[in-house]
Amino acid sequence: MILITGGMGFIGLHTAKFFLDAGESVVISQHSARREPEFLKDDFGKRVFVESLDITNTYELFEVMQKHKIDGIVNLVAPPVRGSTPTNDVRIYTVGLLNLLEAGRIFGVKRVGLASSTLVYGSLPSGPFQEDDLLPIESKTQVEAFKKATETLGLHYGDRTGLDVITLRMGFIYGPLYYSMFNLPGRLSHLAARDEKYDFNDFEDDEYDWCHVKDCARAVQELMMPDSLPHRIYNIGGGTSVQNKDVLAAAKKLKPDLDLKLQPGLSPAGRANVAMDMSRMKQDIGFEPQFDIERGLADYVAWLKNHPE
Image (cartoon, rainbow, N blue to C red; front, side, top):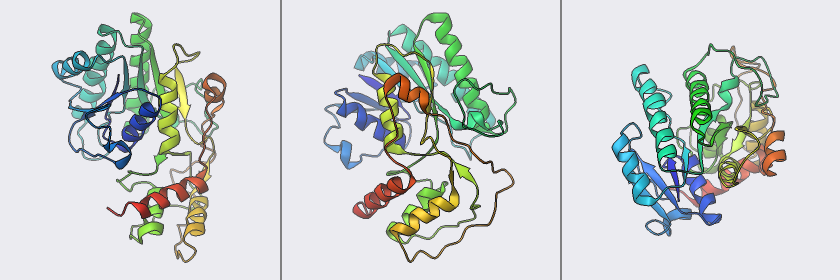
């Protein structure tokens, strides 16, 4: 039984589906909103269980661990990028992290997977970024700072206790069930599928390592299954650096009458060549992404058209 904390997010729900397909059952933690996508609906209460859980509450977490005989933990919990206080961020990333690690140790789970981010590379000039790249202590953003801290503390805890801890450096994720509309593929897909209007102030030459949520979820599931892994830090991305104008071009193939222009050039914070090197994933578990940006947007737009709600 796998516990997915933060499992009601779009990455968590897709990850649950891949665990089910691999023969596992899952517990999804719910902190606020609850979603039941059609690809999981028939399994709720049978192989998918939902528990109200605040990971900073030790008693709630340990009760779930004992009740469901959890033998693996995937932590996808993250405070909102906007609207949270520094104090709350630190509390979740430290108290919550410690509780999860202690739960993993005490209940003898096989592995704890901690979601990290490509933004840990945010202070490096350019990629392709490799897991062994040296990262500066100082950080430019909230996510960069807290994910570096999560990795350092989590891996050190593993060193001290023998708990198998891995960190999952996820790229920029898009695809079905994404709802915040911060990223360009999400807004373009909604525009192409439903003609929904959004602001497009993106710069055409800015680059991102986009990863379709199905690729991300499959990677997480496949990293949690082996009895042992050769490494403890893994990039999970598309493996390519894609300019915004190429995302727009992919959207226009799906909606030829799309009349939209992005801002010219590179944004003040933009960087070139921000791909994450995916060779470790291929060498260690045979993983390769299935979706490039064109195929990924096509899948996303088709899903949106078939799910108008």
